[in-house]
Length: 72
Image (cartoon, rainbow, N blue to C red; front, side, top):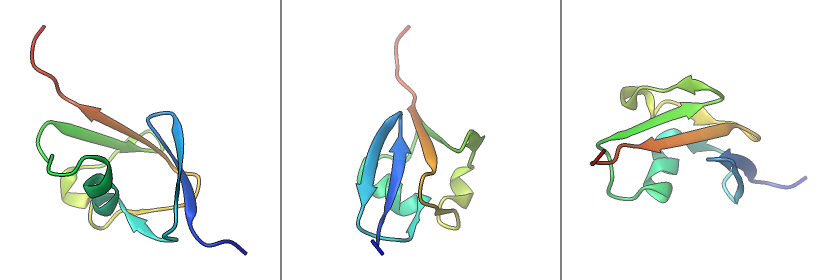
């Protein structure tokens, strides 16, 4: 039995050695130092930033990370 999990992040599959990862931990790896102007959806459900630490990701979850950009 393998440990770890596979997540789809912005339509790209990534494998993580950790079997349990919170959304807050994932965001530290995927967008280090960034906390403003980011929205995240897990399995097509937007997760408020206040719930990132308590949101535990599961194997095969689909995560969409959207960052705001300036300009127009």
